[in-house]
Length: 297
Ligand code: GDP
Ligand code: MG
Image 1 (tube, helix red, strand yellow):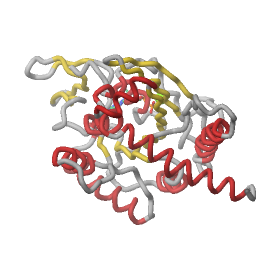
Image 2 (cartoon, protein in one colour; image 1 turned 45 degrees about the horizontal axis):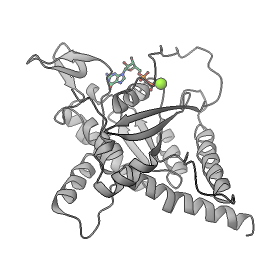
Image 3 (spheres, protein in one colour; image 1 turned 120 degrees about the vertical axis):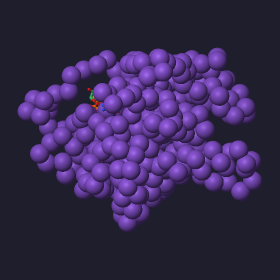
């Protein structure tokens, strides 16, 4: 049973800096209700950020717009502090008319950029609070067909503002062959529409181990994930995080069973710093430049 998240395992240099500063990391989850967003966040961060809530029935009144909810938790691991914020977006895709579902989400991401820009413009810039969204996990319904118009629209609107990490939700509902085919279709759609998703950058002079690690992560995109916040018994008696079926047990932390481990590895271990850097150096910088231009500065 994995009892830790792994962020304190970052490469040494980054690690030491982070120990001093503590991390701030903001992850956003987007996708239709019931696709397992809250469960996956709990599975990822081993924290009960979300208490189980029943899924509202389709007729239930839950407003007419996408809500933005932000939850923060301090987690500590090997003396490294991480201030984790999860931004949830209930209501996305749940309405009769979802044409503008992406809009409150773009607004929220931009408001976070603005708040950062405002701090940068202050005289005292020593302690910047970084509440920008560093990663957006986008949940794709496990239909096996292809991306839906709402998926494409969302990703097109968001890909220049945030690191997009598409995942196939509830992949335990599909067979391995179906997943393989579905991944190809999704990647085909993404390429066809010119959508930029976050992929581990490849650098020239990296050591063999890192190159291989990155390639393995890359080969799993879009990650087929399974979430579970309960322990079940595997056929061999081990207690594992997973979901049990009459035909067997799907283990969340078993790479043979799903891509959860790879997603977590990328998000909190190998690429957390990359995600933060790319947000700052590229996504935020472009936003800032456009904004200043629009203001005629
Ligand atoms: P959200 O509305 O996207 O936040 O979805 P929840 O996390 O609340 O999950 C909705 C339902 O799906 C719950 O009954 C979960 O137990 C179940 N669920 C969550 N993740 C998975 C998964 O990976 N596979 C399966 N089969 N069910 C899941
Ligand atoms: Mg939820």
